[in-house]
Image 1 (cartoon, rainbow over the protein chains, first blue to last red):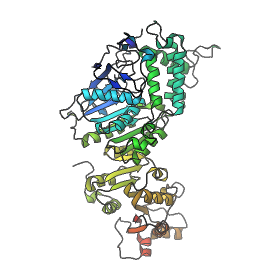
Image 2: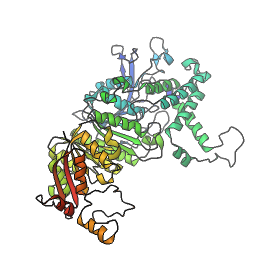
Image 3: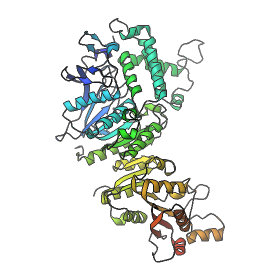
Image 4: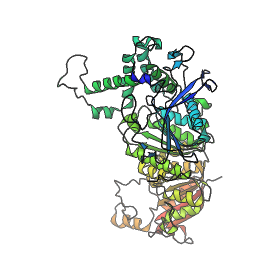
Length: 387
Length: 210
């Protein structure tokens, strides 16, 4: 069993446990109880409870935004953006990030133990939506005693949650920053996700999702899913720049199916290292939640209706080489927000790093985030950090 | 001093004129808002709902840092996405001549806003006429320093041309000003042809026709 699976019941982070008396009604009609939410916080909540920023993580992210990851030992996934003196300044703001439900780092998900059977849920776990994730997060924000978040920030699937937050709980979101995201998952993106899921389910060790009970793990299937997905996070230019046609530890092709090329070796490494920290069933559930996301469809077919009367101020960011969540997706949101009269800013950042750019050193992203959050904090009367 | 809360003497002359036309508390879209100086002034001093469109990422970032709602985009393509009548004033400063379709841009401005405020370099200015007449070459002046082959200004017009276009679009000219080389308004009692000769820039406040 991987180290990641050990994080499911007793995660190395704060945990909110809600019992059967506080069931979470899911969009599918199913009910989730008990509910466990694993989360991290950084910084201090001020007396007015007005300086809280919620960060929403992406598909394979987790609550460990700005601390060493308990499984991989690597630095937090958004350490470049979050910390003392950083654009999301933990000396000034109270930063919260929770593992999404359906995840595998301590929030209720398919790897959690079903109290009825005392076995892991596996595919008996109810299928979730982005809206369900947000409703679960709202429980955590209630528990923390925060009425209105200063900001909700996130990229990719995290950006979907940001949009859902602003649409579902507009009065609780002062500012929203969806990065490299979309108001709906495109056919192409659903297609890529389906390839990943089929790879997992085609692995004989998946055992119809009961691999934990049967003592196996669909390592190959999940790793192939990650390899395919990883290509979509990069760009042709980035792959070319990084690897070109360079050989891996050799000078000529071996006329075999070894990883002759650096790019093959890189992808294999990405696949294998992912399996160490991620649960295969979680991957199925979270990709499904993204596929189902369509904010316009949830609002009678009109994206503008999703944001009707919303007072939240928005700042959207896209990256030029991101073909998974292209600029046109962000522009569509901008148009809808304009049509609904919402306050919206939008920046397209020049980058050849593809969708992954939102996780990387992008000074222009940092400058935009800092400017937007500073102005939101000023508008809410939050003091500068005392440094 | 609050950042951006500058006094009138520090304001660009055309900005000062435009700011005088915009009514307090109105909804304003500044197309090509640059680093947001005018919008910020309007937001602070006239309590307007200030929105902007700006081509450069640096400009948008500067605006976002001022707390302004500005999207990266351009006048030719992005005005079409706004619903009818969502602004009271749509401002286009020194940009009309650089658009691909000035007429369409002006039409869109008057569709999404009841009022349009447009400032542009006047190609009918005597210095430009003289340049063309005596040198026989495309004019290069202090205000328009680019040569013909690298200028972003692809659709020059004169003040009279602009008046004709406004008439074609059935727009009412609420107010018109011309600025001379020193950035000072040309006296208002002068006839049109005089403005067209002495005004280095035209600033027009148009209202959508009935």
